[in-house]
Amino acid sequence: MFSDSIILYGIGKLILKIKNDYKKSNLCSVADNFIDRFMNLLNKSLIIQFLTSQIRPEDSAINSGLLTGLQGLKVIYRFLKKIAGFIINNSLIISLMIYKDINFVLFAILLIILPLVPTSLGLIISAGIIGLTVLSLLHKGSTFKYPKLYLFFLLTFMGTIVLSQFFNKGPAESLSVFIIYMTFTFMGLFAPYIVKDEKRLYLVLNSIVLITIIVGLYGFYQFIFGAPMDEAWLDKDFSSSLTRVYSFFGNPNVYGEYLVLVLPIIFSLFYTADKKIYKLFYLGVLALGGANVLMTLSRGSMLSLAIAMIIVVILAARDYLPALIILGLAGSSLLPESIIRRILSIFTGGDTSTNFRRSIYQASFNMLRDYRITGTGLGQFKELYKIYSLHAAKSYHAHNTILMIYIEMGILGLLSFIAMMTAWTRDIISAIKYKGNKLSVISVSIFAGIAGCTIQGMVDHIWHNYDIMFMYFVLLGLGSATAFLAKEKGEVHNE
Image (cartoon, rainbow, N blue to C red; front, side):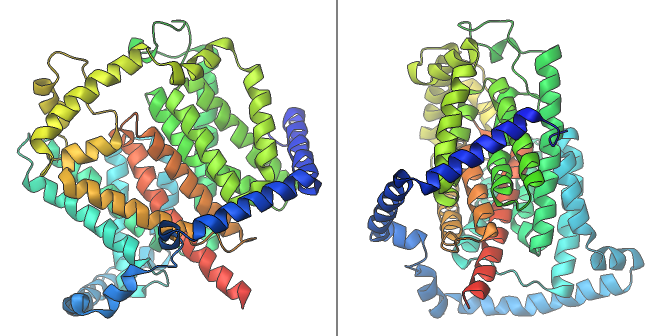
């Protein structure tokens, strides 16, 4: 389908010509020198030295006596290893699943079907994947090594999820939220152990490409033939006849968040593809997904995707910067007036959705004053909001992910999340130095998607939809795995 498209072929040729002409121009030399000097200036700062692993506080902690008590865990590990061996050796089915790496097969399948199935089925499959992965790790081990600082703060964040339950005095359904949070964060923790090598990584990434095509085509179907619309999705300033596509996600903002996560990855596959037919294919999927972002009419998604694409291009594909700018300007001139007005309303404000969020933020901050230390506990916002809203806009979340983490998990949850994301960012950035390494480009693209989605989380609670939460933590894990493989390959190459 994509290979036969004359339009895509023309766009592809145009992009490559702009790229090649730019690389030969004096402007490219001037821009590269400016960026290199700017980066050298940044490298002298303590923050950048920390992010690029030039300063390593974890080394002193490892060499100190603080972790001596953890040596006792080796005894527990040996005990669990014996149990795993007993289970595998006495069950033909489990033994077969371990040696055939069925956990990886289920993982790839889950990535494809996740938007199409209920959360409960995703939880069941995730639990099975986690169980098989634990048995496999205990029985066969793994070559993957987590960056110690990121692993510490990831486990700390998971610990605050557990701790928040002790302060949770809400209804029984809060337990289901806790189970979802723990299961999906565990999936992120074990993702690098499931994706063990470069071949499996590409299989997983192309699984994401496949489901992006499916949801994108259904999004086009909704745009052409219409779909049921919630009146709350359209501001009064815009035409009520417009269709905001949401594909299988039930909400256009949620669908936009998913695309912000995955489209930078698809760009990296386009950028690193060796064969022109593959480049054309990934370019077609990228165009399909980009068009769907516009059709969601989600201003946060449009802005977040633009930021994500700028990040991945500047950090890993600088030669495509002119093509990105030119195509962005050319594409904006072809957009319908309704979409342009929708985008511009980001900066003008005053629309109904902005006022809607303002009233929710006020109630959320009122709630935070009473629960800023311990948090309310997971799943309690919508119950307590009835008390603090003072008849303001109805809402099930605070429309801000950072704020929701603070409200429900308290100060420890907030600080551990910030520390976790800082340590993860540091791990990804440290892989950028392996220039010419395709895996380095992919790791940066995963970072860009996470960064873009997190930025969108400033105006929406991206984890309110559990499909997005699953993808968020899985991509954290895949980012760590990709950075590890990039460093491993980079070190071998340098030798």
